[in-house]
Image (tube, helix red, strand yellow):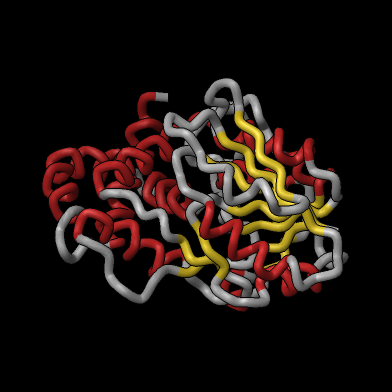
Length: 291
């Protein structure tokens, strides 16, 4: 038994639901799909789903944020095994649900992975695509070496575990790191499998860089509030290694002068993930300095 939970905001989820339903109708195991619209500013089309059994749609009366909407989805779920999917993905394989069903009863958290299209997007979306292909699109064997680096856009988890570690009252971007640390802190085993979704909802460079900045602010805030350790993510480890030699502040000051050039490079036809790392470091170290 499986509850598939999809939070959405201003995104057409018809292709995803149709793709899931095409597989579900061939499976005897009880499965439900619950869609939570977080008060979208454009009207969602419900006609496609009205005749589908076991598909539930609800709309928040106000914008609560992704974390709170996921909490509502989990509490509405009939079954104890939850599969969270973001609205802007599509399963990469035709036996997507079947593979997750075969993993039920193993570790309490299962991450299937993420992929990106082979075709390059337009230049405005290129940075997010390059970063995704280089840093996120990995096979299970490689991901298992760092099991708590998970992306919640394709995650199966026991309901009681999710409700225990989720923090619906926090409305901040970049919360996956904190969520992952809470799993680590409680000793929850994370199992990785090759059952990816294709991430389609790429963002323009300017929007993505804004979210990167927000994520660094969230990370420092979470450290200060003891919601994540100071040595959990790669950017924290890099900062700490430089700080040990008294170089963190020097690099932060130096990068201040290079910030406009970094932004130009990241918006170019050949965006560098290494430059993005420095961009993240600048904002992380700046927020640390001000904390």
